[in-house]
Amino acid sequence: MTAAKGTVLITGASSGIGAVYADRFAQRGHDLILVARTKDRLDAVADTLARRHGVTVRAVEADLTDRTGLAEVEDILKTDARITHLVNNAGFGSAAPLASASVDEMERMIAINVTAPTRLTYAAVPSFTARGTGTIINIASIVAIGPEVLNGVYGGSKSFILAFSHSLAKELAGTGVSVQVVLPGATGTEFWDIAGLPASNLPEGWVMSAADLVDAALVGLDRGEFATIPSLMDLGEWEAWETARQTMLPHLSSAVAAERYRAA
Ligand code: NAP
Image (cartoon, rainbow, N blue to C red; front, side, top):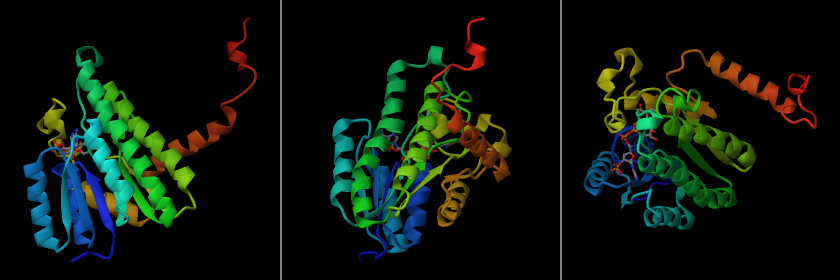
């Protein structure tokens, strides 16, 4: 049975946040295309959701740091007109300081956290705008606001996602295509084991479940919110940051240097 609601393509859907997004979109009646490297885990998620929700679920085994794997998913986004949502979720982080982190690992992190969502967005946007409808959900992190909190390349990669989403939302305004950027705080997934700092090391009161995170993010999506930070209690703090940015924007270019930089 094909769901009438459109297909949702989710990267990194074999575990954690991506697997919960898959469950929730299937529950809403969407067909799914799920992407990750570990085929058996992906197939298990796909089988469970197809059975549980009666939707069609396709599992695509692809390493998104590999050009061939990435091209395969780009091609699916370009050619499958049933796709209405792209969830750029696959990624990993690190808690290693710059000096002790492997630069090759950092490059792989940039490939999955930056290059993959960029290329997948470029693959999806032309079809979405041509059809006048579509949704892009980019999973950033609270380290997009505080890139110095964990590993610097991880922070930088998530700051890129926030900046890219800002730009994308502005460019796509009025096209019928919406952009949401989600900034999870610490979430209880395998992410922390892979990052080298198991979540058990974090204060319990900091760690949200992936289910609560995704359910809150979907409330934000349904409200048409651009940036959703489920763990931030006072929305006014985000709004104040946005207001400060917007206030500064018209003053950032000038033919003359500011008074403080003029030679005495
Ligand atoms: P997770 O459980 O480790 O999930 C990561 C997913 O990405 C897995 O499905 C993994 O599957 C997939 N993946 C990793 N490398 C891949 C590659 N090269 N190609 C294709 N798929 C790949 O972690 P998570 O917490 O759910 O992370 C999801 C997103 O949330 C990430 O972007 C992360 O940066 C972000 N985030 C997480 C937290 C947190 O505290 N957990 C906080 C803020 C933001 P395979 O290994 O099978 O490929």
